[in-house]
Image 1 (tube, rainbow, N blue to C red):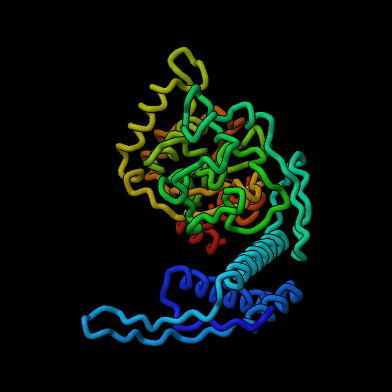
Image 2 (cartoon, protein in one colour):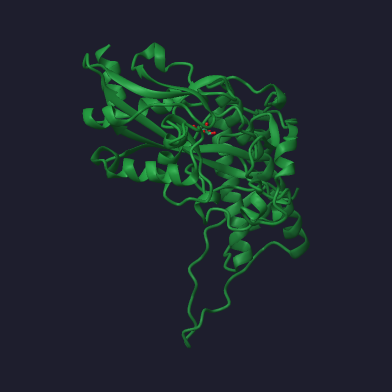
Length: 378
Ligand code: BGC
């Protein structure tokens, strides 16, 4: 490729080219720092060497106060188009390499907890030959919306036509705690924690973030020791914090309380029938909200979590809410498992008891100040 010189740029088209080159430069630095994919780094450096960018000259104003036509772009049109395409391609390659590297590093540092077999993840390679397995569960496909709308006919999953989804980064449902969501060339959102070895939605209904809310409910027992409320997830056969998915709700603490009522306070109705009705759940939630300790609920974590269902294009994010019950509230709360939970119990806060919980709950639980303090004492 001939050496090209871009100087005195002014038109927006040229500005776009200049920012691509700048982005490319920062990627080369990132690749250099990561110590990964040196071949790509060398080829990008070569490309950058072919480009000479001169600082734009200050514009001189003509006497009438109009900008004088002193801007000169020394790239002719066909060359520039070729160059733009070349840069765009390289940029995509560099982004992909950095994203794969991120995923591979994460997999090494935090392996997927209790990997789900149906996912059959491919290993994440950083040599430009990353070939994830495409997987979207049958149950998700059956529950798909026909368009970018929610809740029609009780269907909770997004349309498979991901490119038709609008409003990324605008509503809570399409927003990520990790920052602006990037889309790939097919319009699929990209997991902010990097590649996972599976593309598609796996067992998650929504493209991009799937939001959840969790409760870290603690009490002090008669011996003065801290206990935390855990439930047993039937589906995953693991202990977990009471919590669940955010479905169209705006008040996330409300979602957490609803899940608490469903999973851990299901004492049944008057006839002893389990799985509380909507009204019964609502009244339990209202009851909880009357207590001062629930009014002081503390949001201790917001972010992407290492959930076994995560894919390259669909992932879990959660907000956790910590509530320390006063003795009278603790006495009034009758713990009884319901809904997705097979069991619910108060558990002593010890390192051992908090390890091996579902998904990222072993980490999330440690974000509550009461838990941190209790662990220090042990
Ligand atoms: C669970 C939450 C959990 C989230 C992310 C949801 O299905 O109900 O408790 O935090 O997944 O792992």
